[in-house]
Amino acid sequence: YQVQLLEKTDQQLMNLEELTHSIEYALVEKQVLEGLQKGNDVLKEIHKETSIEAVEKLMDDTADAIAYQNEIDEMLHELISAEEEEEIERELNELREEELNAKLPEVPKNKLPEPVSDPEIPSVPNHVPAPVKASAKEKQAMLAT
Image (cartoon, rainbow, N blue to C red; front, side, top):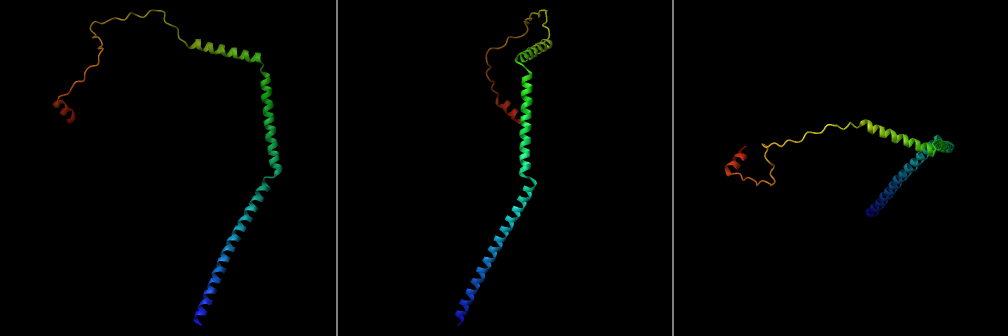
């Protein structure tokens, strides 16, 4: 009789565990659904603030502004003919030339004196001097300092 009672109790415990797992899973599903609902509500609020009409108007305004800028560019381009552009280029080159001429100093007209050779100055050696070997005493003196 006790074995049957234990088996029955084990079966009831397993049923309780299954029920607990089912409840936990249902709670998780409920949280997911609530999260989805909140997300949808937020999206709806955002969409209320930015209507399709407002987006279309913004896009139209942007296209109008671009077209207006293109018209200005065309008008400015048409104002300067090829001849006028050449004249402007010539004037620019003249201004550059004037600037160069104004900045350069005059060249001195007097001649430079001839270099004086000094007999007391020794001639420059044309070979590499051999290294001087230091004596043992000199090496010790250098290491000591």
